[in-house]
Image 1: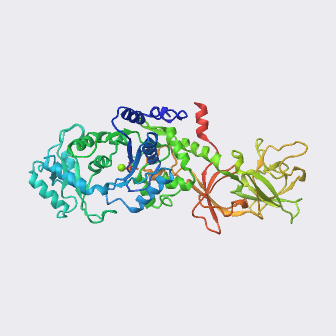
Image 2: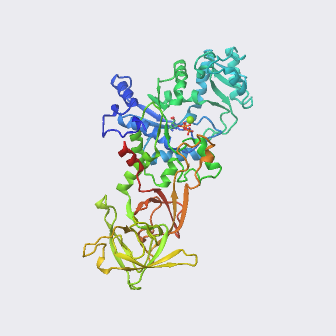
Image 3: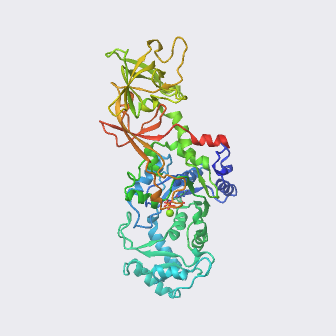
Length: 565
Ligand code: ATP
Ligand code: MG
């Protein structure tokens, strides 16, 4: 861990929070801009992941902090990989995260006509040419980091010939890949991005928004900065891999009659332990059906962690905690979980649920008798009130909470031992019933009627308090336990990523038994199952059977790490 992962001070002035805000503050102070305008520019070729959350919180957060605005702009320049489904999902995710672009929803494809006209401006100025080299040849001519590139034999075409060819490219006369439009900059530049970068390629592909109107499409490098300029973006924030593209970004802005001069700034992308943040790889998991889809609760996508039960507030808090810097780092996944626990501890009501049930029969409790106990909904929030929990002769407890032959430090139930049932009675185990295979299937216990509500008049107090559910009243459910998708903190370091997928990332338990107040909950409801963790009602639930996802266990490994340092 390094300094970028320490929590920020409470409410420092915005400009003191990170270098980006410091720059923006300075620009505003110097009167360079009257208002800050940022944008979040996803390519709609997949669902958003936690890395994007960092970029979203930064762009929208900066706009909020300085009273500016943030656009949502889809960078939809590659029709082969982009789909309407992704456009819709991305908007949904950004809104869910709590951000609002107002009327500022844009698409790079809105600017295709303008971008085309500007390409013609470059051709007329002798600053762009149509090249007939194939993609492989272009690569070969480009040179390497240590060797300069070579000029294409087509580089010296006349303006007229270039105008004619570019027009015919646009009109669909040439097959895919046969020609490109390239900027004429410098094939010997030390920066490979300036070695006559491709501005347009031919793609006879249907675009999700412009349909068949175009068969030439601008490259990312050409479209991005010009889109920023058209929208009046002042600070174009992107991740460090674009640092080497900045001279090209500036070259295009300088050489085109754009209406504004945006500036690009780079920050380090988010990396998380045990997690792969790459749309390409996540798409592979979906396509190979290794997960239930983009919103599988194990996916590091926004829709996945949302389905798993991570609250939006926790993600925003996490983004704030990791901050923004230029130095690359890997953030511990446990830190994200820490934020999730902090929010859920405050907001999630407590309930009792038994995931691996073991039957308990109270032999001295009358068969036809039932009673109800009052239980606190959330000890962290008195306003959350109380609820009534039904109790009867037959109960479910957790298999883990019983041992026939316990080691010394096991304080839960065992033959002859007394424990407290949360909010109910003390019980003592009298007899263990087994099946033919020798497995424990039932416990015969007695309860002490003088301990109603969970305390004894003589002041004795058992060391363990167990959760329980009345068998007669319980609601059945399937519970899905989730763990890291990968079995190691550095997936892909030695093997193909897929080989590092953990086999125990999902465990399905059924039937589990829930206290009756959990019946009829809405999908997305989040509760703490006492002693077990936080859970969220999944959209796979039906009227017959609920499905709950375990969002997270109760153990906070990050808080422990922090204490040690
Ligand atoms: P991926 O590598 O997963 O495909 P990408 O960078 O190609 O991601 P885009 O849709 O182009 O995805 O990203 C939109 C914005 O989000 C860009 O500004 C990009 O810099 C930013 N971004 C993407 N991944 C991260 C990350 N891990 N951390 C911070 N910002 C990110
Ligand atoms: Mg990208």
